[in-house]
Length: 327
Image (cartoon, rainbow, N blue to C red; front, side):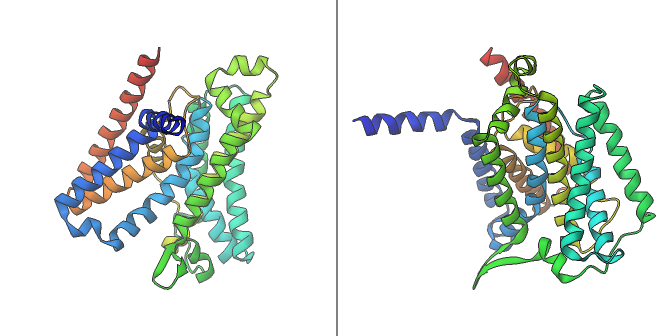
């Protein structure tokens, strides 16, 4: 009897969780699309392509999640995405540093931009929106200035493997971006759930002043969070450059909105203090499936942007309604 009660209680908690509702929405979308377009959507090639595509958004969204949990926002991730990819490609092709050092340098450049955001917010007390809006322009301008607007190609196959490679045995081959997404999701899930710093991230979003009074160095945690957000944007940017085989200054335009949308659709609160790593991954999956479905249904790219905009508004409105009900 005790086992049945505990199982029932666990099942009720699962049903009440936001993640359960998001999974239901995702499954429902997949069912509707499979009925609408048939085998085109359900083919293994298409499904693999969809997961590979949204994995880049999911990686960036995980970093954005950390910032949103603290009650902040980062509008610079799309520009950092491009800048980090360019730095990595330049380091490999022009500066002769090799693939490993090139990737490391690209990741450090993204983390540096994120840390700069954190310093502007904590030291100069700039609002996150203003601070990251400024660094968004800086990173994009540097990307154009360094490259002159020209793409950087002639990248080695060892670098392209990050975005195009597969790992597996026999016919079971998993694209490397998907593996990268899963590894990063597990790492950051552990960070948020099992470490003291992760719990402090939630505490800051819940009540920053109370957290400060309790002795937590709030500014230090914020700088770390923004640095990690920049790092995740750089990883996504480098992986995308590897997939396309070229680093370009136009990469990542508008991706900051996609990252924010994935986090909010995934159940995080715009007011901070709420969110899980699984949320933005599922949010990115919903956006990826929606995009793919619209393409298969031959919907114009212009209308696709409108539909995604509606999804974002609905997600934020739903988040607001949930917060009002809890009050």
